[in-house]
Length: 308
Image (tube, rainbow, N blue to C red; front, side, top):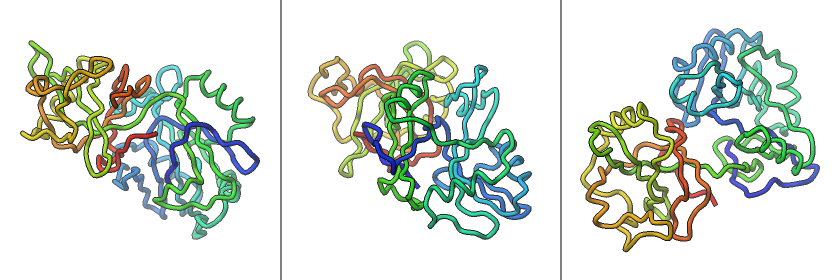
């Protein structure tokens, strides 16, 4: 079940609120002696996170299906998406927020409140944790989440059923940091440093076309520039994948990609997704002060849209 982007938290008794964890959405399935972790796009991720898989296998329930977020914690105990992507976490945790099946009982048609009660009856041990509802009214919750620097909040209707694969509006996600996924469609190489990326050219799908949102350079460390170059080089193609390039001139913030600038870009098949933070969208449709956060292997390029 997917959450719909929203600009503000809804208020009222029918809504409850949870932390929006900064990690990989994961479905954990224990079926007798077999345990499997599935990514958001249903790839088998069990081998990538053996400690989490072992913890699920050790649960007393013989059959269980959990929905949650696999999160990397840094040395200060804070969620770190980059640490998760680069396997550099001090610790991995699986924050569980939904229970879909348990011991032959299908809970997906039950209201969220009933699924939460059933989830609370399970015995969860580290590194598996319960992602509990947040107390307080929306303004208090927003202030608290911002104060600790977390990404945002998920609001859920208390009576909502679990609608697999759907973005029904019963779950809403509100980000307090401007951040979303983009398709990588090209890159420039660093001058005098062959084999390294200087900047990524990113975009999103709209109306059946891939549209450029500009370049992102900040956040790319020297090791990451080399790693990305190696990952992206096999995707090289001659044709520019963006329908809105070249641009006729420089944008309001000087970030336009003109025909002359395109000569320095290595074009790619749009097959890789990156998460990018930024301050705002400019009136020219570019990102202002964009910063690379990490590669998203759990998102398919064709589903990337501009979040409004």
